[in-house]
Length: 188
Image (cartoon, rainbow, N blue to C red):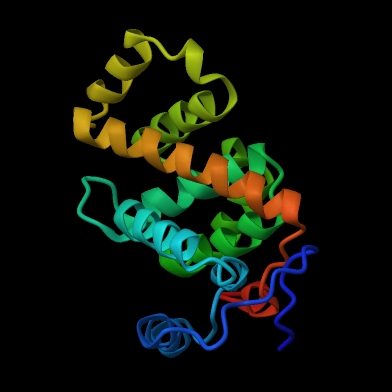
């Protein structure tokens, strides 16, 4: 595979430190690929480390939100921001985690058309509000989530995932980041 994953010419650190090479090998083993978003950050290992630390904490760390919840939030935000890379990558994750290819497609195209329970719909409507107009979030919006069983920690996690993907979407889109071709075939 080509190492050119963005439209910017930022050669990776060479040689990679052992810990970074080991992390990438684990990705290859567990995912069957090294996500291009990780390859894109290899020119600056401080940025790479910061990106993976935040991603791993928000998407894999302890939370009242499930992994599927967090991936659906990523897709909703990425769809709002029209981020090709993240729509493809996280749409694949939704298809895989839900075991429902149609759900993954609906989430990318228009989450409001997806067959979701009221709790999930409330979570995603709130995520969309945060992505589109965070300054308009009110206590009534947070209370609506509480009525669906979300704790204040869960609400913070929703907001943090939205914030992370809002940043990641802009980096991916503005650099011309290409999704790994393998994502297109996941869970179809």
